[in-house]
Length: 422
Image (cartoon, rainbow, N blue to C red; front, side, top):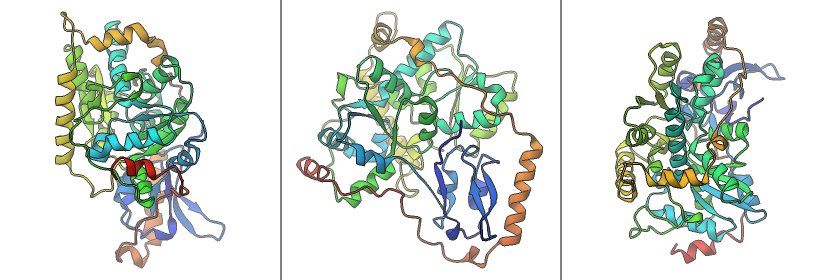
């Protein structure tokens, strides 16, 4: 299937600095395209782009940006039955305002707010149950869509090494649809533009709304939220369910720690960041001594540091580590086990969820690219830059490209936020 375009190119703003190409972990994603007027530009092949967003991070000239579904989401919110699933990285993206943000949506057209961390807890339970049955071992985790897409493109012969457990957000979408019995449109609030690729393949979620675009929308509409300092990490999600240890999934090693709590004998390792994770994925596929689970995240520092969570200078690794520790302390305080040490939450899932509904099926979508094809593409790009490097390459960077979100003013938008204590 053809994949949706996520990363957009603005060739008129390209300085020829090559930073986007050098940052890209997908060697076939970029190509030279000839326009009708004979000019040549660097464009993106959406079927080879893994939408990790590294090129957007590196470009200082506004030559690249990403698209999500924020504009369409706000046009439809309140006009159709819709539930919202909040990726647990919301705590990192909005800090002490995250509960106020969710309450605003509850008051402005949402038919339910659900915790993506519950989906992560369900995913952990599914990993444990399938591994106890002797399956789902020697696998790459699925909660990073850029990693999954990389495996589909560059290691199609090893697609069986990708876990069959759905990502946490897809697990939660299935849970809301099949067990909460709300078969409504689903919008996911996420830190990740690449989630759009997963949703296109699975069909579980219709709108991918990134936290960065949400902040831009709220700023444009002059909607402000107050800090909530007295409620810790709690929120009254619908179905009276809030995630526990699944709240660690956005951070490096989150899945590994969940597995260690429940199946200490499982050998799980983790890696994050484009500088290392894709090289290690290549090594994983060629290795004869694979770990039981390889937790791979494209963004250095985890999902909370993703291109759809923050502008580059908005947060620091130290802040992410502090938030992670707060989430972990809260989760461990709420986690309950029975006399055998089994997570009591698992009993709830066993009584309510059919593990077969959480299985993701992969198809061999492409043939594995030949090394010669990759080398020819890289040589083509190198020749383009050598022949067309403009004088502007060393000029002052241009202003960043405007966000592709132009939601219309909504009467429903502002008064509830003011009631919140804006």
